[in-house]
Length: 539
Image 1 (cartoon, rainbow, N blue to C red):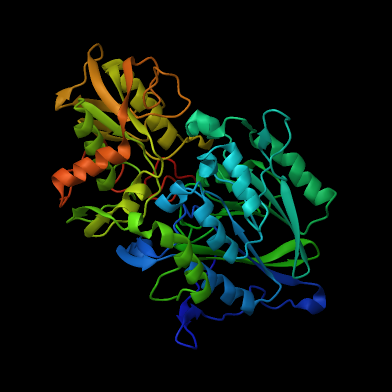
Image 2 (image 1 turned 180 degrees about the vertical axis):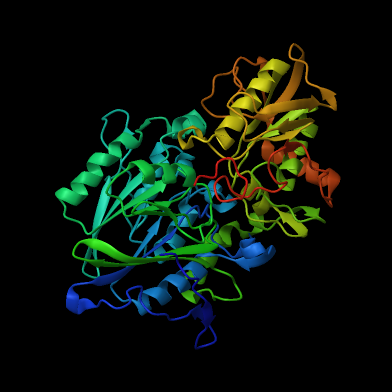
């Protein structure tokens, strides 16, 4: 059964609140032992505590509208809790304490009070939760009023799990078991220094836990909450038996309809607090007999902010406000990061890195985070949304052969048909270089043409290149390219490079684009799974 969309309508007291609707169960009632409950969850908040511009493209309509904010999430959740008292479980699927200036400047502390105000029942750590180091992760976990769970993170010294592997909650007479599973590739995917002292196990830890929940704990519903991305979550649903729902995070995908694999539903609720995932289910005799999924858009014109939570957010950010709101540039074109292949925002950033160092090529990482930047002033807070970590610039010399191998490897990470080979974010963002590829081609044969400065790539020639330093990498590694010649870290970080660029080039105009072209894909691909024609789409 697929979900119908929940329409949010005007409520009393001048607030916009979620409209009432019938419970998921239709027909069977408590007299035959059936129980209906609601699972709510957010993912990839990326420390976006306040309302912000959001880009929506559902049902063939593209528009930018104000949305999100922790206080708006609270209004939506509280409305549903009142609608279904004692029958709601509210969860967070990770990447919560990273992604904004306020989070970076406080090692995630700025997120704690606003998130605690949401009264979450549980959460899992995402791949970016280690950005401030293992000790800071433990401290933030202790600051939260809700428990974190993760089946596959262990301390290197003791070998013991850092968090409980699962949590069992009695919700409305239904016994729900939730297993937490985060990205096992964190030590490779993030700068290695971030996760020092931690060990990440792969998905082989999961089957015994599912079996334990079913056989020993006698739960009615098994939920696997993952931070591995939608493609890998779908892969888990295809191979892992006994799971009713996979609540996915990491890839910022917006599943307006569930992905169904046998008896398992897989969903993902967007990002930045712009959406709330709602899953209504009915259980009878220890089995899920009815289910409905809604992806709720938390638009400002449909839903008000809770004043109490808004006050907490405002008080948290007040000491940082002068620095957050400092204007560092201007843009005459909207800047967004919603394309797997290339984005205008990242074209600007990679140009800034190359101009700062004077190299032939610059590469910026294919990050997914950052809300849209409308036309107008660019603030310091915007810069930290784009680059939420402080990284020095690093330069070196790479051969054309190394560059070709790098792009083949990165294309495999983004377009592989095997979900286990998908890795990290989207394609790197180049400056001074153009790439033509075929996304659906076999491994190692995707790259059709690379040009540097307009000229064809020469395998034996050395090219100067700029990228960001990754903490914990070998000294001769540059943007995941090993054995770089003459590597050198500069006393200049990415933020300073962008500030200089904005000072010289504001107001920004639209970049020319067409630096990376996938010949077999549309010009805009916003999903690695759900977009028509995507080679990673899976039936």
